Image (cartoon, rainbow, N blue to C red; front, side, top):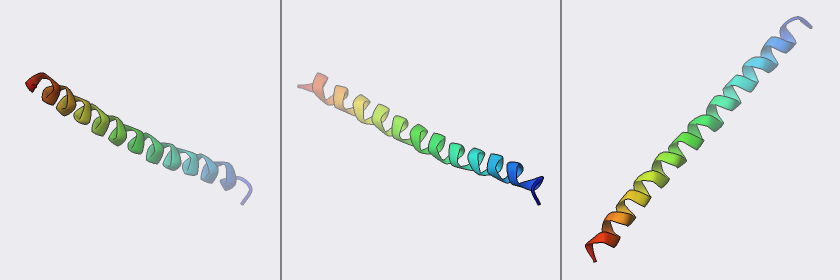
Amino acid sequence: MTIFYPLGALLNLILVGGLIAGLFFLIRMAVKSALKSYFKNEHKK
């Protein structure tokens, strides 16, 4: 059982890291598109 513990912890770390990376990516994409539309509206004026 002690052999499997580090493996489980590593798997947990990868899962959590993947979740955080996914959230970060989504936020960045949203910010990019928001900035793009904002600048488009600014140029129209």
